[in-house]
Length: 247
Image 1 (cartoon, one colour):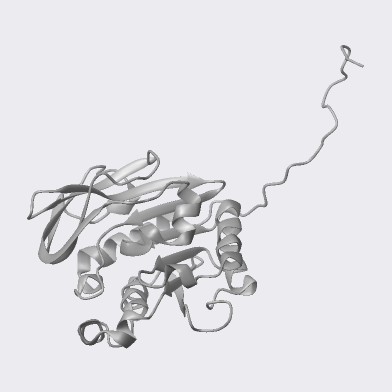
Image 2 (image 1 turned 120 degrees about the vertical axis):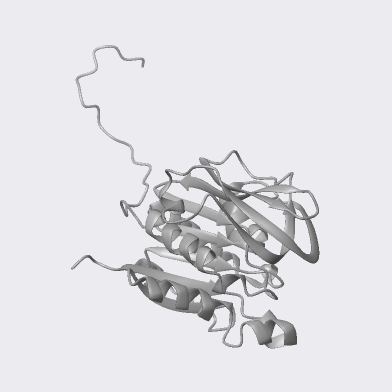
């Protein structure tokens, strides 16, 4: 039997407690809806964590050490994530853990730290239609997906998206209001793979959509570690004898 991928779905879990509309859509939290989709795939062992779960935001070193892929959804409480936890997650990504950043997680501390840019973008919240186009049909993240699919209501994210040049632009979105956006992009940092996926506003049932769930499951499989290894900076002896030396 093939070994299952250990996924942790991290959610801020604030909107669902404070916003009636959000609670109506995600009564058990956004993380639960994402976990439900992953569990239906059958390839994953799924755990959930959230900002107020404990003093470490549910992201203990022990948990991260056995995590293959971490999913991140945050929005209103980005500043409350402790810097030492961000550094812990960053180190684990550099060592090979996969990271999937969803929707408003583009302004999370961890994503901005790994990107080294503002990660700013244009936005508008009116519930318009979104059409998501597959740009790289051979990429593993798009396996089983149509050439394009539509979300009836979403939050608009528009260019320019201030991120480094991605390794792959997997999806481009067109919005009813006319904007376009690089809505699915990949990066590599150290040994770790990163995927940012834009759809997923807290007041729309986007994480129940079958195509969205397929993207997320595919991304988790793609981002699973190929290697887990620290990146040292050792002083080393030469492999061959050095005949020319400067005193």
